[in-house]
Length: 123
Image (cartoon, rainbow, N blue to C red):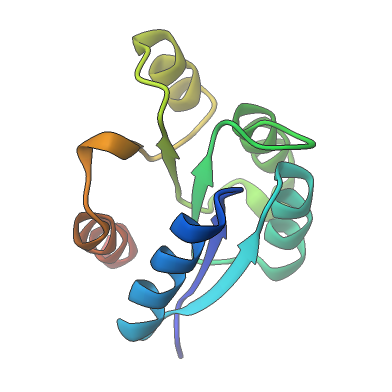
């Protein structure tokens, strides 16, 4: 059975690029362009992994993470944060709220994200 990945990202071009690359690797992709929609999809669909931006319309990524972890359905889903925020404070906050990994957008290529996703889903 294909693994499901939810991409919660408001930047259309980045979301599309991630979707295309991950779909080519054989994953089923779910998408959300804001935090509120991302949380709803996550709880309804229970994806195998979530790629989550922090700066989002309607609900920020940290709030999405908190709400996800507070819900039985979302407690165990691995979450990789993708963000432009490079502050150690935000990184610590995301990790304390239960994110499994944290990638700064300017520091990675899409292939690296794919490898990280594959690695997390093997655990």
